Each structure stands twice: as C-alpha cells, then as structure tokens.
Length: 217
Ligand code: HEM
Image 1: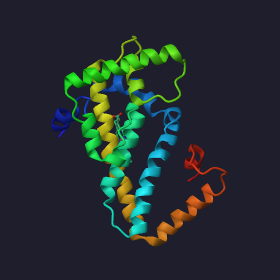
Image 2: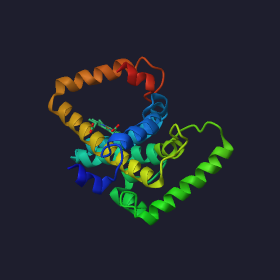
Image 3: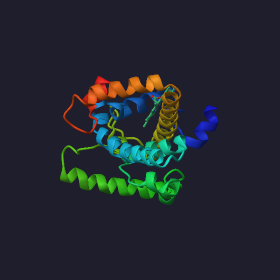
C-alpha cells in the first residue's frame, strides 16, 4: 500500500519514515503552528461563504445537491489558497478550473516553472517586508532549514506539497460531507448545533466567525 501511495504522491510525510520523516517533520512543524493556522480563518470564511450560498440557492429552489463534490470544491479552494497562495475560482468553475491550471498533474518541467515563480516571488517579497501577513505552506516549505542550515530540495518540496494536497483534500471533504449527512439524518442534533452556534456567534459583535469563536464552540 505504501509503495502504491509513494508512486502516486511521492516520498512526503505520509509515506516516508526513519531519519527522512524525522528531519522533514521537524522542518514542517511550523506549518501546523496555531499562529499560522489562525491566519487562514478569513480565507476559510470567504470560501465557506461561496459554499453556503450554493446550499442556500439549492434550498430556495428545492433542488437537491451532491454534497461530497460541492464540499470538496470548497476544501480544494481553501487548500489551494492557504497552501499555495493560489486562486483558481474552482468552486465556481469546477474541476476544469484546477485542471486548466494543471495543479494536480504537474509534470516535472511544470513543477520547475512553479518553483522558479515562487522563488522569484519570495525574493521580491522578502525585500519588501520582514513579516509577511500570511505564510502559505509553500512559503514555509521553501524557507525551512534544518540544524545544519540545509533546506528541503525541490524534489522534497514537490513531494510534501503533493502530500499536503492529498492529505488535506480527501479527509476534510469526507468528514464534512459525513457531518452534513449525519445532522440531516438527526434533526434533533441539528437543532442543538444551531443553538450552540447561535449562543457563540450572537454573543459576538461581528458577522464573520473568528479564531476565538472556534475555540468557544
Ligand atoms: C478532518 C481532517 C483530517 C483528518 C481526520 C486527518 C487525519 C490524519 C491522520 C489520522 C494522520 C496520521 C496518519 C498516519 O499516521 O499515517 C494524518 C497525518 C497527516 N495529515 Fe491529516 N487529517 C486531516 C486534515 C489534514 C489537512 C487539512 C492537512 C493539510 C493541509 C493534513 C495533512 C497531514 C499530513 C502532512 C500528515 C502526515 C503528518 C506526519 O506524518 O507527521 N491533514 N492526518
């Protein structure tokens, strides 16, 4: 299984082990730090707005909607924005938009183009500002250095990006679709979720959900 997965997503955190896993896990720990994740809340909220609008439209017209695909596009939108600082409008345009950008199936030559573009962008950015407002995973992958001062190789970055996309897309889509299905099946639980959301959000003086709101739920 590991061999099959490795052929598909490379030798990133999910498939590597031993010294390699240990070194890269340490290097990538900042990607999971709360201070990094906190900055993604706004991006997530804007993407969720689009998702909610789709559900509202379906409800108003009495149309049924395929939840897994719809939620998946929202998850992909968030991942691409947070992970790669990349806008595809995939929630509105569908898979076609992602395929057009060639993201999941990049050839080695195209990866090199992406890397060069990101490196150029980073050099320009670091000359402009000391503390960038929102570090995507790619930023972290490019700047991470081990105790000997070595960075990840381009091949390693490619494998970690593919791993994050793989690990982040299917998990979030499955769990969110399952949660939606479950609350639809259990209206009593759905009411309690509504109540809890109301109690936290109505107490706050803002319309967008914040990191603090999330910790109170
Ligand atoms: C509800 C959502 C998620 C669930 C239930 C979940 C679950 C898991 C589990 C159980 C593992 C351990 C796998 C193992 O030990 O072999 C794992 C590892 C991992 N997940 Fe997630 N995950 C979720 C979301 C995400 C997201 C959004 C990302 C990235 C954007 C992500 C990236 C990773 C990575 C990189 C690893 C490997 C970590 C390591 O080996 O140190 N996951 N996840």
